[in-house]
Length: 438
Image 1: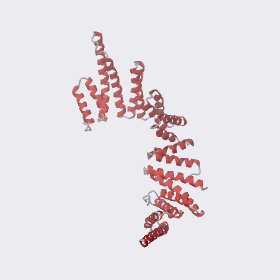
Image 2 (image 1 turned 90 degrees about the vertical axis):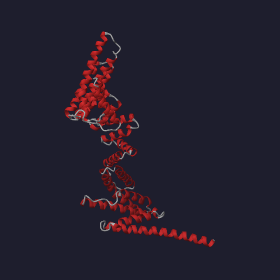
Image 3 (image 1 turned 135 degrees about the vertical axis):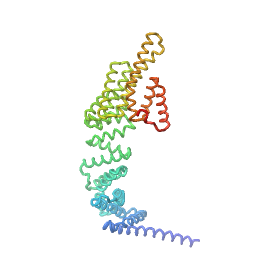
Image 4 (image 1 turned 180 degrees about the vertical axis):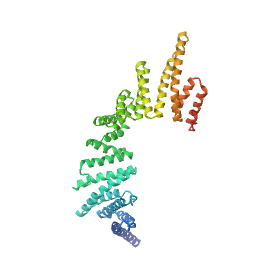
């Protein structure tokens, strides 16, 4: 039994020795294959995969994985992949990259090579590789960003920034020597994270840019959107700071308008919308939005029985809706909104009329009849706009509701039921018959 155990231990030792020998052999194979590929990438294309496979074996060994050499070879290999790709693409734009994230992989390998370097030349080689791959990372990031692979773009851009820090910490030059170049790269990195919906990664980048005084209004726009979901007050403060710093920026102005719309701060909105119109006088949506603001102010004043003020807002709403239609005939939002403007006025008259429903005196009945006639006339003013809106968008639920109610008020029950049926069809996911008013 003792003899058997000794024999078994010998087998384990032999197996262990063979594994280490295989790893060293794989590293030599990888080095040789890389050399052949680097010499003639097109003629020795098969050597790339051979080198990759051999490096996988070599780096799996505990001892070799802690040597600078294996990572240096890997960095050089993937660096060569990107370099060859960039060179060939200039000659043939249809050229594809042999390894999708070649620059990122090269960067990761060079970092490892630097980490495990013990000799002076090993450190020098690793830093040289990092210096070369830095520009490749920017190129790879730009390409993936253009292809809308924003997560990959962020990874590459972020690696380029990290490479800068490593190089500078070791007394080497970087492609981002100028602060403006570094900040520009941070900006593109933040945009990539933002587009990739990686808010956790995007926020610190844009905060750093803001603290550095980066002179782009988009930084404030990005931070506003990043803060909005979690802290509306902080978001508003950032937006205000951006507006003060860049008062002429249209994008920040529009964000401010939307912010006030969500908050229902109507009085603050009119001036900002008029400022936006002054910058974009041919934008129909701005007039339509301003019309909506005046419409809401009209309803607010009407509810408080401030008839004169209410009528002034009504006229301004109507004026802006019509201006929107002048710029864009058939604009659904404006057409529907004019119908709603008249409809809401009729609804207010209906409320006044209903308040007299129990007054059966001669004077009360006379006043009731007068208000009813006024209500029907106001609904008649709304009707053609809702018909037009229905023709533009037959499946709009609010338009169908308005038409159903108007015809019911006009005692046209058959037509009202037509719209009721269409609403029921819409609510059950059926198809609307768009021929009713055509």
